[in-house]
Length: 486
Image (cartoon, rainbow, N blue to C red):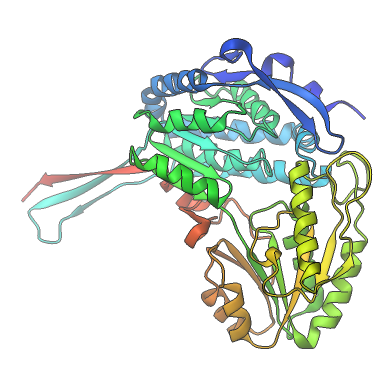
């Protein structure tokens, strides 16, 4: 097995600021571990406030020139990044698996998904439009001109270390904004590699900056307090999102927030069970269940509950667990020990309240942060796992007897990111699509993420959209000119 770390030279494990790869002020570093072994795989620069502000210095200096760069040129650079990512897909995928833990097949899928954001927004870059029209009352003209919002700060999560950065960087660059990305401390290597790829693709210095740090709170706070920052985009928990929104309010920053979820997956009695099972496995187990849109609660209508549960449990029990770089592995390591402890506690709480474990439910012995695919039934409504984002391979199954009952349960949460419904009745599907209080609904489909579709939630699951045409609008302000012309 080749060493995935060979693709990222030691000099590129430092901060990417302007045209340089530099050490953190004072030379501080922190360790990145392989979650499947617990062993350190790299040391990367640990930025402080001075480093973050240095990145903002160069992003601000580069802003005017990048905003004035012709849209076609920006499009070409994004296309070059897309092609470079596809060309180096295997290298990037192996690096993702090594630092994040997901199986290699999943990592390859993330590279393909993340690369598509660069291709999509390369096409959007040349389609930003204003308008010119006669005012309804006559006597003058209305001219609107979209303009880039300015330097952007991105805080990205560990679960999709390439795709979540790509989903922010690509539309920002397409719109003419410069960027500073603070990746999660658990998975900084992939973002550093992306910065290297974009440098090689010809993206000018200062446009894409990467600041790795274990001191995220103080570094990000300093960036948000600086008036040169004009946009914040964050993907992560609702709790952290609330804190960042309060900080962003001081300078009235444009914000995009993709926050926590508690997705309900509903299987109706008239569903095609083969389709429902395939969809449920994807919605629950994609990315080891470490996804904000993962099926958190599986509701199955009573007439098909027994059959669905038996078949779903059999498929979950057949999944293999191991190091993500090994052949044939379906379920890799979770990101850290805290994640495993959380699942242990959620399962124990449900069992204490009367739930039964059909498969899994006990972490294996040995090194690494592993937890087996787990299915529970007879899960009571007061179980913590029904009110908490599970973020792992644990699936509670709950029966229901009417659409009204399950709709109320599905909507009985502060979150509103995604939901899923499986039914062959078109009218029923449309009632669910409209009745679920979520930003996204999968109808007879467990995979809903697509760069060409608007991704985002409602309520406490977020603000704004990523992807699709809506994604570039998040990085544009509009200037209106009233032109006297009788």
